[in-house]
Length: 486
Image (tube, rainbow, N blue to C red):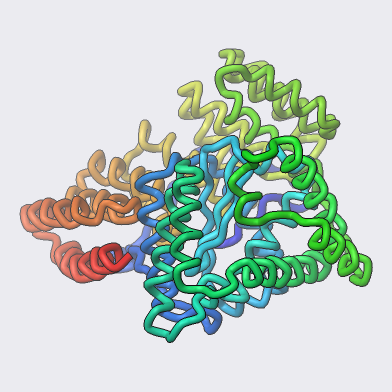
C-alpha cells in the first residue's frame, strides 16, 4: 500500500466544513483498469527467490496470525516507513506492513520487504521516536539481507535455511512463542558456525543503519538509546521469560553503549516530531488491547503523560463505543478544528458515523475529506462501506480503484467481492473473493473460487472477466508452488 498523507495543510478543515454536502458520483473505471495483485518483483537489494519466499511467508502469516485491522493506524505506519525508506539503503524494494492483534512487545522484518508490528509495540513505546527506532532497526535488517546472509554454506543451502528460519518466525510471530523461536534458531544453528557472533554483528549492523536513517529522516537517534534502555529494564524485570522481540534482539550493555556512542556522533536533519499524532495512534492501539475495559486504555494513556489532545481523542472514541454518537462527533469535530493538520480526525468522525449506521452522514463526511485528500485510504474505505448500503454500484467502482492501488490489502478485496455481488458483477465478485483467499494463504480455495468466477462470467458473457480469470489462474498456480516451496 503506498504512502498516503495523514495530514493536510493547516486551516483546510474550515474548507472541509464549508464544502457542499451533496453526494457526488465516484469516478468510473474501465474494466481493463481492474488491476489485481501479483507476488511482485524484487529490488536490487533482494533476490527474486528471497522476495518470493517472503511474500509466501506473508500469505501464510495472514492465514495464522490474528490481524489488527485499523486503516487509520495502518496509514500512519505507512507514512513512517515512507519517511525512513530513502535513508535505509533498501533501494527500490517494495515494502508492505502487517499489523498483529497481540499485546506483547514485538516487531519483525521478513525478506521480500514485509515489516510487521504487534499492537503491543505502541503500548510499550511511549513516544514516536522510540517507536520509530524499532521500525528503523527492522528496515536495517532488510537492507543488509541478514536472513539470506545467515547461511555460511554454499548458495544452494541458503534458501532452505532461510525457509526454515521463516517457518520458525511464522510460529513465533503468530503467537507460538518459544516453540517457533526454537525452530528458527535451531534451523539457523544447523547451518551457521559461530551463530552468536553472527547475531551480534547483525544486530549492530541493523542498529547502525537504523540510527543513521533516523537522523537523516529528522528523528533524534537518541530515541533508539532510550528504547534500548527501556527494553533492557523490561528484560531484567521479566527474567527468563522476556518478550519475543528481546529473545531475537537481545539488548546487552555493549550494544547499548555502542548505540549511545553512534547516536552522539550523528547530526539530525531538519527535526521532525509528531508526538501528538503518535499519541492518538497509541490511543487507538490501547483501545484495541483493552477493548473489554476501555477505561484501562484511558488510564494507561494518562499515566504515560500523553498529550492532552490524544486523551480527549480517546475519550471521544470511548464515548462513541458507549452509544453516545452525537457527543462523540462533537468532540471529534472540535479536535479537528483545533488540529486541522490531522486528516485522521475527520476520518475518525466519519468512522463513528458509519459504526452508528448513519450511512448518509458517513458518506457526506468521508466525501468532504476526500475532496482535499483524494487518495486517503481510510476515508476511501469508509465511503465504500457506507455506499454498500446506499449505492452498491458506486461502492463497486470505488473499491476497484482501491484494490488497484493497494493490491496487497486483503480487506479491500473482501469489500469488493461484496460490492460486486450486490451490484450484479458476479464474475468479478468471485474473482475478488479469490484474490482475498490467495492473499490470506488459502490459495487452493482461491483456485476453486476462480472456477465459480469463470462460470459466472460465462453466464454474463463477460469476455474481459474471462480473460482476467484465466490469467489469474496461472498466477495462482505459481502462488501455490511458492507456498509449497516455503
